[in-house]
Image 1 (cartoon, rainbow, N blue to C red):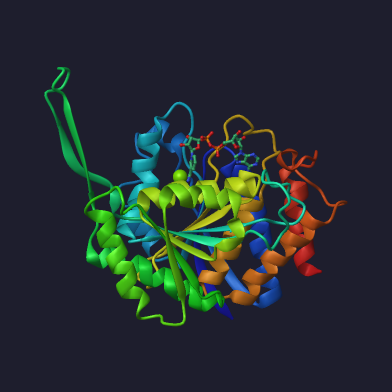
Image 2: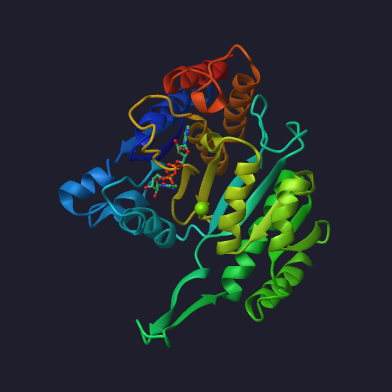
Length: 355
Ligand code: NAI
Ligand code: MG
């Protein structure tokens, strides 16, 4: 029997409510496909920060290192500043485990009303590939003459050839794997003088390795407009850390509720575990009520299964989500316009997998 070790970090707020539903689905999938998932739970969160002064123990990363994947809920809660919770747990995991790809599907699902008019499932179906380790998010820079009218702040972006080439190759490989041979590059080489012309050069160079893949590039401003006006034109979109951050929230925003969107923080070479987590946070406004939509967490399990090479299992999860969302009689949480609980919706999806 195939066996995988999964580190489970529910984190804060609704992370603790949606994770059990994701694990329910994982159990059903394991039984159906004859795969064993050994789960190790870690309660690292803002709660542990308040009692121990740390988001995770000093040897936290070492304890995670030997798992095949990390399944994460949401981290951050009122009472602990967000930069403490983020830099104390999520960022170290992403950087130390070299999870240089942030991957997010943008897909209009059946039964979900999109804020854009006249779009059907199938019209909006693409992937945002965001560089996750360098670029605009750097600590290079400085601040001087503070508090005077000469105050000067410098924030420097850094793009390495190594980091740029590998994110682009990932995007092209993804397009090839998905059978949608088309990659769009997010740029701004008309305004940003050094980094974005370099980005364009590397894109053109790497594209030559994939002659069958159609390419185009859009400046980030018009690209944002096109996400809303003509989302059907996209298949795989590759972007720097900052542009990708913006696009990967804009995309799911265009398709409806944030409660269904998943993401992967991926180390493609598998040298370290990758992390799968919903796009949403801990939702303090609804935490404790048992009404959070568990689909973002469940779809994250689907992405994890794909990453582990269990593609049939991953497809089963996706089909179950689509089946339940497309069934007007199935339970729906309040964000989808219904009155069901997190557990009702999780159970319905788990049952759909068994057919
Ligand atoms: P949020 O995503 O937690 O909530 C935004 C809005 O969406 C809220 O109205 C919430 O009720 C709703 N929402 C989110 N997930 C939902 C779900 N599954 N079902 C139904 N409704 C849902 O973002 P917010 O409020 O900005 O952040 C709250 C905390 O979460 C902060 O501490 C923040 O730092 C953290 N956070 C953590 C993330 C992570 O772990 N990767 C990502 C985003 C925020
Ligand atoms: Mg973001």
